[in-house]
Length: 278
Image (cartoon, rainbow, N blue to C red; front, side, top):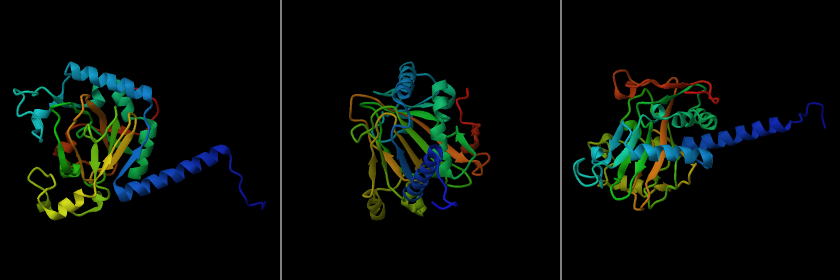
């Protein structure tokens, strides 16, 4: 062995390995627009979060969004009609429960998001997502193909959404569908309808949709995806509600545009991601 050779300690080897894995994950995310991390949340934590969500759904703890409010395919026609009281989202998740807030600052999660955003300083965006997303049997709706950034107003199309599965997500209960690499495409405005959903009547759009994959998840799995990635979701065809805790994050330099909905709520700066209290 030469004198210049370096012997790595076990800890040094571990951190080098983690750095290599992180670089591989970032390369995949940069090209594909999404990343799935299996079992990021522990089983016990998922159980607690789901129990809280179920309790708040049962008593309809405000603020909420109803399926009837969005009028997507399959949604009840109005709040007064059959299924009109079906909740689609429990809004303002970060402020509504301590456990929800702690997950939003989970050290492994924040480390991953910082890596994907290539930023040491990030913010949890409270104006978008920041919810428990639900799909209930019978009255859940279909979400058509869209890019989140078409509805958001930031300086750059470069946010990361984190989707924590609080139960199994499959094709039968309306799991997320993704078009890999679509965040890198330049899609002209005429390819979208007036609600900014991808038009299904155009051959070039249908060709894109044929490239879609299903993001099937187990409880505790996390789907991270780029704000420009085309995604959609079907209806829940099972007899069990599907629940997910969803947050979005931005890098410090990617500011929301003043006077828009994206700037309507204060953001959570994430500097210390230890086990602090909200």
